[in-house]
Image 1: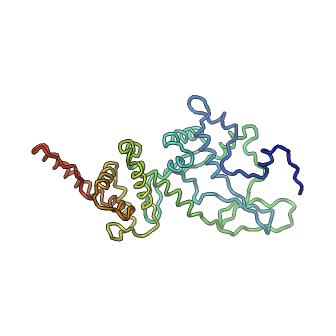
Image 2 (image 1 turned 90 degrees about the horizontal axis):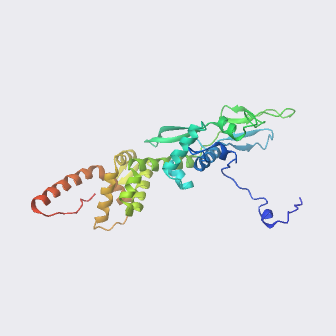
Image 3 (image 1 turned 60 degrees about the horizontal axis):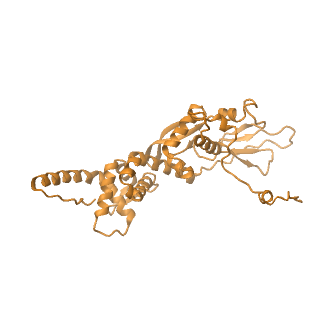
Length: 323
């Protein structure tokens, strides 16, 4: 095949370059507006990303070219999405993302649903799932084309795989086929979504924004502890090594869910004043976090006694008990 180039170097270089990912129809900038009547660019970007995940991929049958199998990009019935996942991809803050999702809900384009997800015996609450109103998306994208711009609609579903198969074209001499291939769940992708949701949940549990404002010089340590807590809460391992002993992962995760911002500050301060060198940082941090709900009360009692001692004798001891 002969290719006749345009003569424009830039245009010719882009020939054959396939750009994939989210697509933003220009009409959305006049349909998705914020309260001041201007295009809500955050909401537009998030909708484009959500639509990308809901758009099916096509699988062509090499033995029957008249059959097209549509597949989902996610493994469950709705798209699981977390604020931390959005922040890492777009740089939007949790406040920006929440406002944008509220705008999309107000326009009846999406619906948020919060579920409790169980992974390897550990329950994660308030995991956000996004439902998409496909008819509404099509309506604002193609306002002059009627209810649906597509002509070749899938009309047959495989009972064994829950996959949609396009109706056989008229005039074909080939016999109808049944797609018996079972859709394999992308467990890695699903676990990533669960982990990001767990990170969001831990951040809310610890009141992250206020915490990093108060301990701004310890943000790196805070983020590391949050990631470790989320890792344990979503771990597929049966047991975790804590205090030199194997303990059930579910038990460890439940203990970590008791930690609040004050307990985490206590752990950070205790680690910072510890005179002992740390050879295994992860193990040390996990043990400190696991012990925190128990030792924090002891710390408070000791603080009160130190305060009383200082009032009575005019002395003060700033040391922290070991975690």
